[in-house]
Length: 292
Ligand SMILES: Nc1ncnc2c1ncn2[C@@H]1O[C@H](COP(=O)(O)OP(=O)(O)OP(=O)(O)O)[C@@H](O)[C@H]1O
Ligand SMILES: [Mg+2]
Image (cartoon, rainbow, N blue to C red; front, side):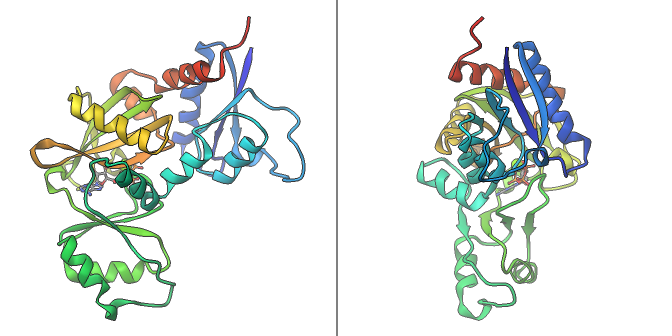
């Protein structure tokens, strides 16, 4: 019987992180794989020592990229690849890669590095940004989940206050897709195939995330939406991806972001599909199932 580790973050106390790991474990059990839930701090990353007991593979449900890399260095297949988790964890980096691959997305400008306590407000730089992306616009920190680091900026005052606040932090300026206010689509892609999707909508917030009070329902994707979601995952080399799609002009899909560690509970509640099954099947097809 094959063994896998399902690594999640032990410092996050919210139930949804362990719940996510349990959904994957259920999928692994169904495929006769002995799955062990491992908190990230349960592996001692002593860099000069080798691990004694190694699993056949690791499903990595956290953004502890150093641990993912440590496990990969031990010769263990890690899913997603640590490099993919790292790219997805930095929205500025992922937008650069998506744009290079020609993936449709909102106009996006990566903010320059400004050291904390310093300002480039007098340089004319921000006027240039405002010309390319007029208000209202989105400012989005490079690192953030559950919509917590995504801001809708409507006035010049809000704009200049936010950029001062963000000195020292990586972020992007992004065109606000007004047609998509309070609604988006989450598409889970596994191994280049769409496995599940849901429509998310909020009546109270421009962000459709369920964590911000949005609700989710089933949706049937257009072939264009499927194509764009798959293209986005491929552009980042993401074997597993949670792709968020916005509705552009004429409902044309635009990629909002790609999650390299996508949560699978909400989509299971909405669709009855445990994306974990597809993840495990994909891994088995890649590394080979156990020889009986
Ligand atoms: N450019 C945009 N135009 C319109 N709405 C946007 C835009 N960018 C983000 N949003 C809205 O804000 C929400 C959160 O944005 P995004 O997905 O980039 O952040 P996140 O915090 O990483 O979310 P997640 O919970 O998926 O990790 C999106 O689901 C979408 O509803
Ligand atoms: Mg998102």
